[in-house]
Length: 95
Image (spheres, rainbow, N blue to C red):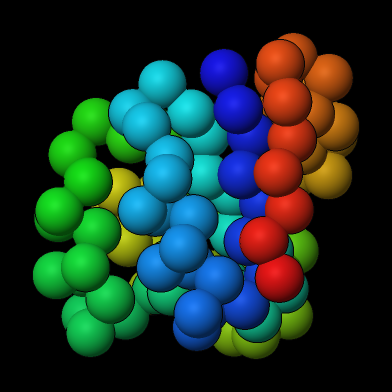
């Protein structure tokens, strides 16, 4: 499994999703957290059924997005982030 961390929406997120596979984990951090919330983003993620999509919960909270997180995502803590990185075969940072 590859852990893809994405910290910007464009063009980083598009590049990541072009190369990621369903076995990988996509973790949105920092400004990319906006892509995990709101109705405008929902259509984008419907193209990736079965992908393990995560967003850092602190980045959602600081941006006031916790209540609008899309159901396709799981909110993860910093401890979860460390565990994901430790269990991954490789970590790729986009941004």
